[in-house]
Length: 489
Ligand SMILES: Cc1cc2nc3c(=O)[nH]c(=O)nc-3n(C[C@H](O)[C@H](O)[C@H](O)COP(=O)(O)OP(=O)(O)OC[C@H]3O[C@@H](n4cnc5c(N)ncnc54)[C@H](O)[C@@H]3O)c2cc1C
Image (cartoon, rainbow, N blue to C red; front, top):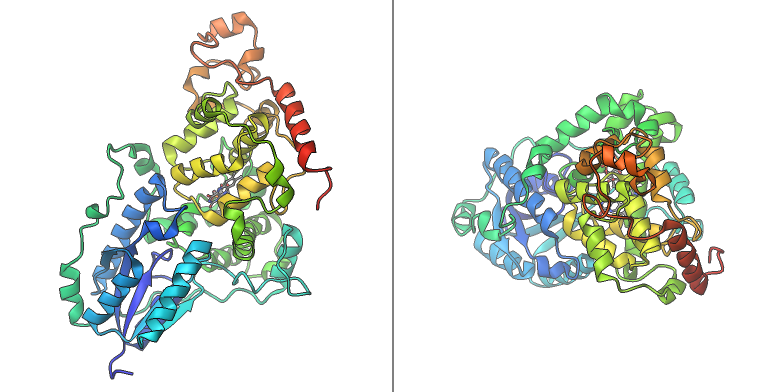
């Protein structure tokens, strides 16, 4: 080993200085070379979508500024990742390369190859868990097998040792002399081409604050108040009852350990297994995130194919017109349209509404869950392969812990139940603003004079329902009989 260790810190989905195990290990050893490589093709077919790229641009900007403040500029490079790592290692005379692990199948494959090649060239490589509470292999059945149902997974997770306390930022960071020369070769952030052209991100800019500081502020605000009403409010899209931390978590601007312990602290520091009420409900959601990663890690084929193999026989319908109308929020079902328009505008949609719109696409239109997953992938700022795959296969009934095949959301009653005053619909479907709470979720069932008084001509100002839900439900049940006898396999 060379006398003065120089460690490349390969930033990926860990765009933070706080509680970053790879960065800490590197800083403790000596000088560091922080590096981000943009290599979307290596994640194919799930290279970052348009909304994710927008987020990434701003998150990198913030990370670069934070590192710069500590005296270590961030190197930016285009892929291929292996080439970039080898070149930087040579230029900076690096001895070590460290990173925090990711669990998407294409990324695991790439990282394994990179690790083997770098090790063979004499570099020391180390990877860390910086993105999950537990490694996907740490929670297992008594037989050492992966779980496919959430509740037993969660029970076992709670029996594990409490996740380690988060580490603070490294006190000092220092860079090797050669970093300055390498930094001069940086492409500008704009040259990565992450921002949309034309610029459609105005609404996103107004509500999101990508980066570590924005993430910490959102967490602090959430645990102060909304956390204590989370159990009741989390299903209400008309309220700000959830944490909206998902994009920060996806890009690793905040560690799940930091959230876990912040929540525990708010309820007196009890062990998680003893926590009840709102805080327990919230920790359980972090448990779903762990479960999603556990599934994707153990069943990597599920990013493209149903976990339940019998569903490969489902007679999906090729309906480009229906799919387009769904994407645009023009289904004639207000809660569905509101959700799809919220997604288009903010790059985010409330979880309850994600379930409703997903059910509508796969059950009422019988369009494949993969079409929905792809659209979410491009439009969500929190697009995450593990959570997206789990969510879509849950809705389609073809994944682990899926909704039973006969559970087909009725979009009208879901709207009435979870948006009882119609406020969410009014916000996103302004053409229905003048309808009362009683009418707003089913304009097609409203009296002609009610519609006239609200200034709505159906088919003109707002679409007629694209399907008769009762008929569509029956058709879906018939199709589902082809693949399943209704029992869990
Ligand atoms: C069809 C469908 C697709 C989805 N796609 C994604 C996706 O691409 N990325 C994504 O992060 N979430 C996805 N989800 C899960 C969930 O909708 C979002 O995590 C949640 O709405 C984010 O808002 P929040 O941060 O306010 O959540 P909160 O309610 O505050 O939950 C806290 C955190 O727990 C995690 N979480 C919550 N619910 C889930 C879940 N069901 N599965 C996995 N993790 C969860 C998220 O990291 C979230 O930030 C999807 C759900 C469905 C039904």
